[in-house]
Amino acid sequence: MKPNPLKEEHHLRTKLDEYEVDVPNFPKKLKYSKWERLIHVLASPTKDPFEPLLSATNGFMFMKIAPIAGTVVLTLLQIFLLT
Image 1: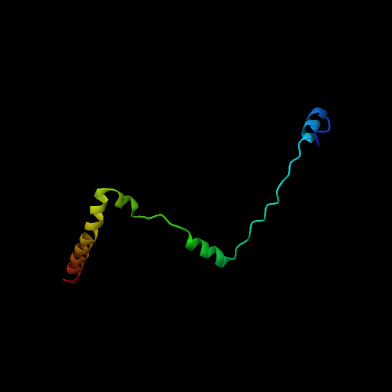
Image 2: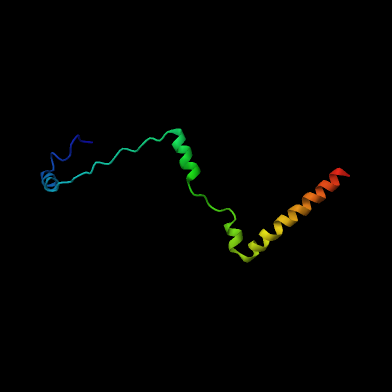
């Protein structure tokens, strides 16, 4: 590849020289400390894991019945293990 192709292309060079582009000064990205990064992770919003269950009518019934069924299973498990 040639070092500077615009030197040979006079027409292109004149067209490019017609435009003046003002490039804004963007601030550099701040480097956060480990503590600040931890705070950002802990403070970021999370997705609700029960939202798909609560949005459907069957899911709402599941959320009511699941604790009762879990309690029954744990109770039966303790009874069988202790006897």
